[in-house]
Image (tube, helix red, strand yellow):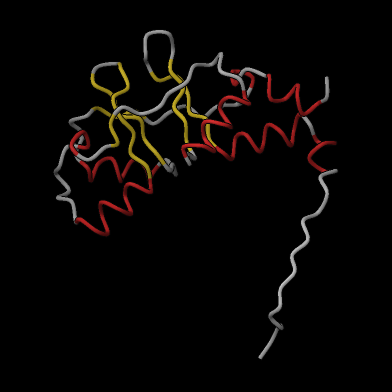
Length: 154
């Protein structure tokens, strides 16, 4: 089995996952933004009780804040992305990467068997994991040729 194949079959529980920033659906929009800034996160997981009901990402912020001007007191549950795609720690890296690529996600909530958030898989964490655990394969990737008809300078 090649290292590439091995890496894709690894369960994501082997990756150093981020602890999710979790907020309740009733948390005001302004407080969610403050938590995202304070914790330097691109997303938060939104729950009702202990179960994941939505996510709110920096992309949502750009759309909602810049285009719609949301009242800061608005409960995040009213503007979150509902019914988020989640995976478990048993999901393989290959499955997670394919899902993230197909759906154009940069963050993927990890839940336990009861649907409670336990981690957050990010593109950065995947890259770090591959670079640390499969350095030969990452370092030995062939370069990508970039050809342009444009000339540099004035």
